[in-house]
Image 1: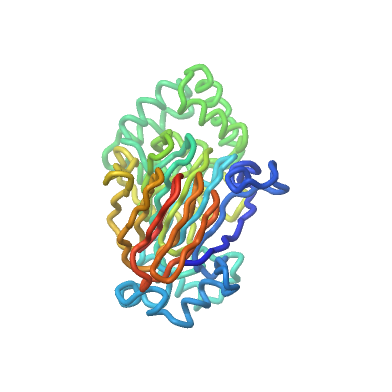
Image 2 (image 1 turned 45 degrees about the horizontal axis):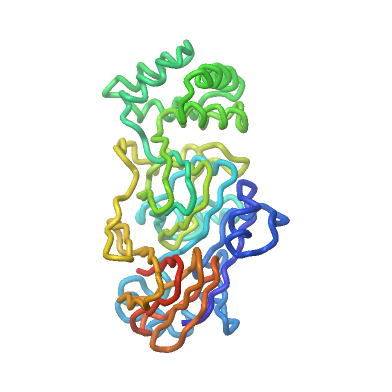
Length: 382
């Protein structure tokens, strides 16, 4: 068990407060701090306390660093990526590919020789992900029931949206037609519709309406604002989680949380961003099935909470420490991060004290994790 130093990503939507405050640094930070990455992805590998980049350390001894089972299952790479995510502004409207789509897309772009800045597929891995809220967290996750969406759109009373409501009520058309229709609108046409919808939503005094008004203010001519009418709008309370399988359209709006995903940075964007948007490729990977409730129910075992997910790339545990040491059996490589209090994490090869916002890595061959102190700890593993 040794300290692991993450990499801050200064994306424009990030908070200048949340990560800096957690780590007891000066607030506000000089730049927006959207994410801190803890992992071995080639885009931004973390650094071990002994100075080695984590990806290089794993490459030098894959079986020893990952453990036999993880090495056999995933090959010589850490299968997950852990992040602190701090959104002061909405993230882009996006979805992520499944394993087959990621592999074929990456191979295709490598063969064609597309410049890295214009690639959709920077690696060949899928990217299902889960976020656990540390503060109240507002998000749009997965498509709503199209009939419910149609009823709410009609309630806005915007004539230009009557056709959208009719499409959603058509079982043969539905979301598969409504989404490309909206994303194909011209910007000037969008501006007029968004303005009318936002004015109507401002009179409804609902959270969903407030989201629409806020998005319209930031992106007055972006078709993604209208697509937001088709999504589940949710508020996570601290300790609640949302799981986004590959192919599900989503956008995080505001809040601070711990995010874990398969070790990938493949993102297909459809709007609400100044970054590159590729609507045809996004539509190719989208899952148009409605999602009743994107929240993931936890399983509690005393002070340890987990959120079951239908993949084996990652598992996330939240541990509440109240003074008594806890021994937690963890299979494979693991990253521990403190999100409050003073905690110490140990394995059979060493121990590390963690202040809030600090992390440690433990090899898959290093036995169970022993956590002590008082505070909150997250343990990411395969």
